Image 1 (spheres, rainbow, N blue to C red):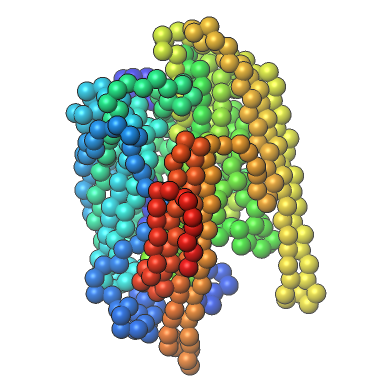
Image 2 (cartoon, rainbow, N blue to C red; image 1 turned 90 degrees about the vertical axis):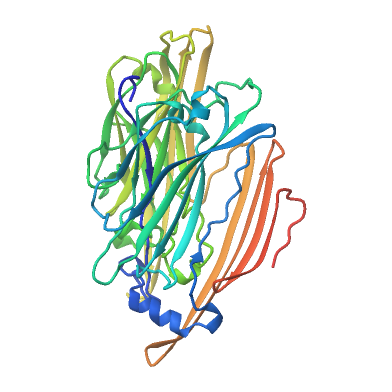
Length: 486
């Protein structure tokens, strides 16, 4: 919260998103692999694939390494917890205090939150031998929150236990900190925010702390106050789709079409928009495809930044303002929340600002459908959005900043300048053989190439292929000179 005496909420949300698909389903988001389905597929696999030990699932991502000259890690176990019947129950909470190595005032060069979990027993989409997975998330930008005392750590994983499904999740959550040996001068824009304000629901509740947007007219919001000495504001947006909209990009016109947009509203005005990346969860489309390599973003959801600095002139009035979220064309349901990152004047002096220009015309778009026989057909969706704002901010450093932001994007994609590039491609296929309506065999393969390059010299390449549960080829280097494909 904005005042230093109020408790701070450090929220980490994990889902039991054990999504689903029958092999011949036209509406995959209504189905999932039952215990009987899993047993049938397992029985049809070659002997080498039969699961006796746990299967490790992983998402291909760039390893997190601290800058050269860093010390550490200083590792702290934050939580060790089992999640049994936790669906529609309150999140697990525990008091959080900064590790002693952090309270010493060190300059954090990298902070990594590690989630490591496994599941035994019968569960949706799961193998008899159980599963295990881990996620390493860069949380350096939350350095001010990690250093704050009087905090609460909340973790929600909604799991179902009944007479059929008895799989319990066992999870450890660990914080790894690295420190610069010497203080480093950084620009204000590249330094982590001084204060992070949650834009979400609040405890206590029987669910995660995210907002749930249930339809295209639903607007979920909360009120926030900005300190009088803020000179920059960025809203980080978390978003994920579920139920009828889990596969929104496959929706037909009678399901509100295949286009979705998450809009951010400030006191009712649209100030930003997110066109979300289509994340496929570990059981989506066809669960076999994502074994053992899961889809892009499935373990570490992407977030989206909305620059609100041009609107600080409005926010710096010592009053609360309403920040809300809506989803264009939404069906039930979307989970959305955010973190408001605020940079504060180092002298504590009040800042001033003003909005020079603002333009946010309505979204334009259309859906056209064509069918010859009324059974088979095709449809096309187009959309365009333009949001722009220009403002100024003045701080005690006698520096006046003019900030311009814009959002111009087409459905096919968007261009922009940046300091890094990422090419991340997956090609997958699966085949299930049926004889007399019974599964007689199954096979699947995945090929992924992850190629990252940055202007500061950082680079990472991973080229990996799996067939069934076996990883047959895995080539990864920290230098992207030369690419091997198979």
